Image (tube, rainbow, N blue to C red; front, side, top):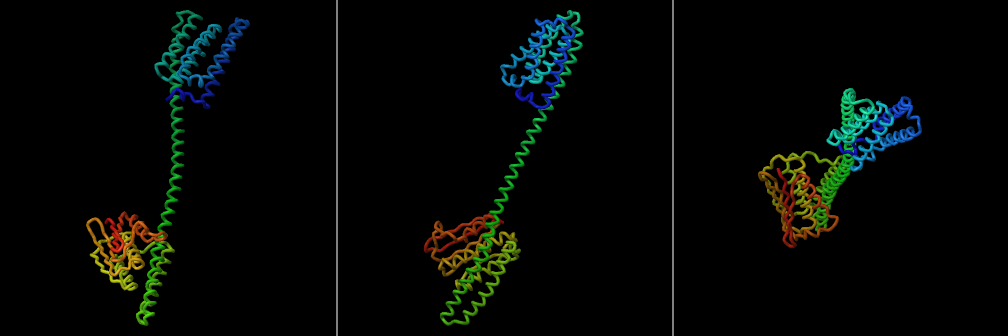
Length: 394
């Protein structure tokens, strides 16, 4: 534990020094009562001032020891003060009160280290010297019997206190880390919510485009075809197309209601049948023949089926509006690891890098394919038609 944080200015620290100060005051008045010589101003004044200085230095130990060079000065200086105060008082109680407090304090900020042991030995030598001066060297044994257990007790107590303080600091640091982590999780949750809302908006845009936009586009194509037949007095053909248009309008309305209700598509049981319906719808509306090839498809998730169906529908819609094609080839190929849909027309083609703003069909295809971990490739040149490839891993 770093020396700067070994003693924290907290409630425990204040209680310790308040108790020590009370002991110092008590031993001060005890010395005055037992040694009448201290009543003389020549001894009373320096004795009192040195005691005050000694106590004040105890209270200032935190800022003093934060500078490494001051530690040795503090240890030596407090030892000298304790020696002089004890010598003036001629009170053996000072031998234990002053030096034991210094030993506990030193172990506190130096720990059970080499420098802590040297400082403790320094204070013990001064204490023993004071004790021998007051009594005689034969009584050193009694000093030893008193001091050794006291020092062991102080060392154990201070060490346990420091470990408890360190554990409390770690607990506080952990609590702060947990609080910080909780804030980060809250921020992440808010970001995820924002991303979820954005993703849901994109999905709603795709769903509305795939239902309303494609459905209305198909209706417009069929109405245009009916109008052309009416212009050429082919009423029966026009009436047939109008009937198909009305049925398609009902289907589009149902799809739109379903998309608005919960934006969820029903389970798609037969991919081949759904693709053939899109091809037939395109042929009936435009009269453009479509060569469709599809093997037996393996079971696929609804998301993959829907992606392939929507990609084909959007591609055929674009061909009807822009390609001026004469024929279209649609192929569904199944490999060991993927399924591929290709849509190729012989139309006028277009520049892929200059798609006008507001055309979200290709963007919708790419988003859908990306969500099922697939890939999209579009090849087109002016006058050479367009090829769309959608590949989805199985």
